[in-house]
Length: 103
Image (cartoon, rainbow, N blue to C red; front, side, top):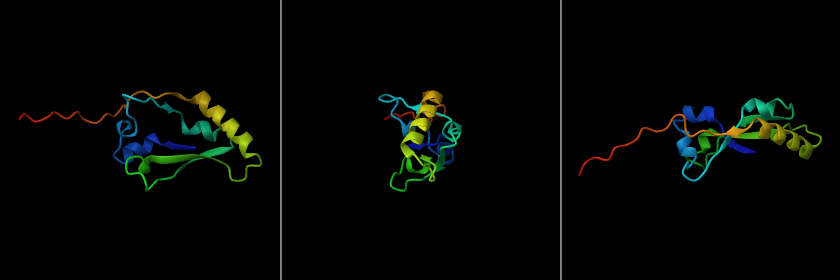
């Protein structure tokens, strides 16, 4: 499962404002620990060089490589993430507003 990691946004000089168009979309957030607590999945930082805006903060939720039943494990992981997920508030670190120069 592809996602953006909030902690990486700040390290890469990006904000939630660059990830979301708040006038059109909402997002959900969940703690990394939600995926890890199942023991069936983890979260890896997986930068995407093909995406200038989001690539630096890209991460992936992945089921363990030794999983005997990937579908069942994903069902469990998704259920835990859904339970822990909350509606994301608008960007807590919005970009500074710009004031147009007088003509």
